[in-house]
Image 1: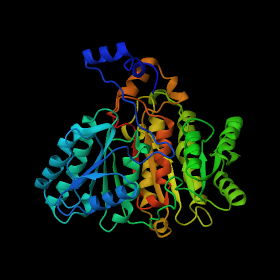
Image 2: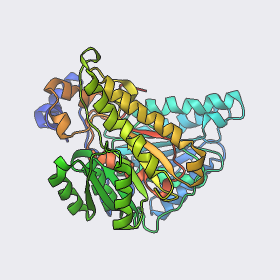
Image 3: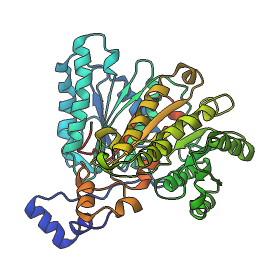
Length: 447
């Protein structure tokens, strides 16, 4: 947990003062560790009507030897609640969600999980059904803002005919991998979903490239991808060569010193992956810079450098990486956007432009029929306040405000971003395409 406010309010004196003044007290978040169970307690399941997705959830929990209950017993602490509202027809049917989840929230344990399952509103057969389906987003986001103790709430919309793809999303949102993902809406569509032989190593046999891998979030991404079984090509600028080599050695991968803005960057990355490791399955575009100034004080060089590194370089590299002989069929690309690209940020018009541009890129590529025919997915993560060397240099008051302005009342860790990227890189997540997942603890800023 971060230093400063969060540390103080978890001391004896701090707890008492926070209680007296009604101040938020950040909870310890349950994060994933290899070998730990998916959940550490029973799960309440149910829904509206036939609730076919709830049945899938129960089957998954049974395989994981986790108890499912339809009604919690007196004093029982729940690890999670899964509510299947995929069969709602009118807003009146939402009473099923209130009746199931509302009372259960009192029994939800620390770092508990609420997962709501539904269908995409755009596939609705009637206006009433569209309204009911869209209402699930408002309910879920509101639940996330009511929860305490590190608990989270997220919504998974499963397209008709795509039920086979829901397991990966359920595993992610129920587990400690999603510790800092709250109030999010993820859509699961049709895709060539393949479950791993071992859910502890879902990327076994895959070759992944991570740009900006020398330190911070990039290094954490390399760590998690390698932990999950991937061979990782770590890419960063020559000036970061020593740190880059350290990351590559730690994860058992290879290092490629490269400026991503070089005209041949994409070709060099692909050639390295093919010659050293036999091909390329996962690309994580993480490299990025900031050159903050108010727009009135931003010169052409500051503007261009940020757009070039954060966005234009990706477009150039993708001509090779997504072209013939590039990313293998069934591969996955994940890009790192930012909450700044969603909500904007004072003094970051160049950075916000680049990160919003990434979202546009993902939405376009996610619906590209040529990539779809090859089974390639393209998604993005949008981090909020993440504890890094960069955020440690932010002025104290601004830093503390950034940490607290979310439903979990604390900053996230680089591993939280990495876990989300690793999830989107799995073949079991092939039904998730063109999504932007915020890793922000449900930031109070932005959509």
